[in-house]
Length: 583
Image (cartoon, rainbow, N blue to C red; front, side, top):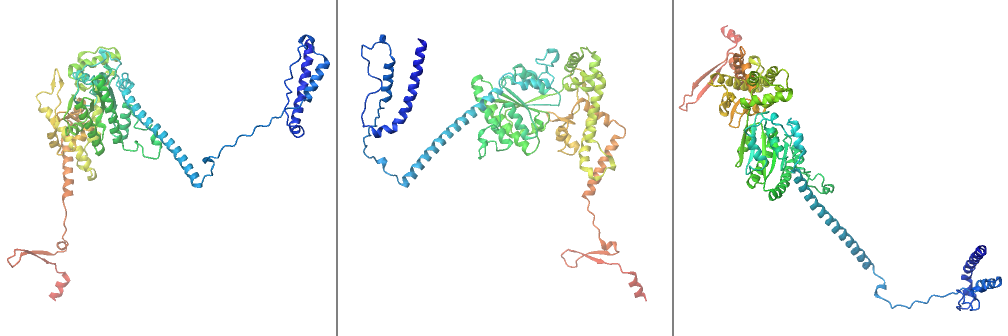
């Protein structure tokens, strides 16, 4: 059965192939020879009822059916023609002007769509960029600032510092209140000698609140570097990643460093307004080492800009700015415009606190408890400067390190201010004026210590001799040298305008230098040589050639009543002429 059906399927497939071939040939021939008639060929008509399924298929029946199917013509149906539509206005031919107008309107519409799209996208990007900037600045004042950890490691402050490793100073409580926002309405200038612990106290106060609401950065003399450090502290890029800078028009970054700093402070002001609404506290901005800003035109402009912002923000409780400085000229500059500024003076530790700090440092590094006599001997040599105490505590030979510190300070002073005596050349007179003025002031401080009733207090420690600033200028006979000496850390001008040695080792260096035999005479010779050179510079020599040649001047009053003086020259007669007259 299956074989029969398989043979039948093969026969039918062959028939279909032949049928397709005939149909393709008949398509082009039949319409020309056959009349336009339509006859049903396929599917075949229904079979009679007597030809049922039980009757089966005979070979003759299959052959006749196949022949009929092959000979049947293929019906050809022609498509009916479409009804003609009435003519419309659009079918009329367009003029050249109409075509040009249509093209222009299409181009204009495309340009308008593109322009609106680009303008919308640019506006959205601009607004999103501004919001992103404010968000980044807000994130810079969030807790957990990594800059705090880096600064703490650099200052060798453990995180958190243990009580035996930390020196609690009197100023720490006030600084803590400023940093956590309790003290507001002012901005602050922290002044003190280098190495007395100003930055360490600020970092400790920031650590207590995990740096929340605080930003701190180091100042620099170059305004570009100052701008970059401010941007890093605030997480502000100064539009350097702004896409608008890629276009031909000038972007917001094409400006000076001072204007960039102004823009950064404007952004900070917006963030401070949001912060005050949420927490009712001001933000804290700390500028460390403010004395590094140059005392020139650009540096003074920068300080004026920062002080104006500090005054405005202190009045509105938006931002509390803290300036940390070692030099007195920052105070002089701020004093001119200050109305809400407060001064915090930080000095060396008193004696008892210094001894306690030295004992803690030594135990921290070597697990050693020092004798009280050793502690007092060290304090007598280096004083209460924290940086010196820390250096001594790390050393195996502590007393030797104390003497080494004094020698370093002495060498620094001599390299900057040594005098050359009476044999100096006049080309170095300007430098020697500066050096001799410093030596005169050092000698005056040593002499004043000899006249003081009390130079050491059992409780507070060293009492260094000092002069008011105007008296120091009078002693030096120059008013412009003292600030440069303060910048070089040779002398110190305190917040109360008192001039003294920069440290206890430096004052010991003054005593050692001025106590040498012949120093006073050597200083006097130097001063005399400077005076002689200045005198020569002020003297003008006039040479009368007539007097050199033997002539004489006769000065007489005019015979009239005018009172004028008359000068008559009488030249010396030559010897040859005298002999001729005698002959």
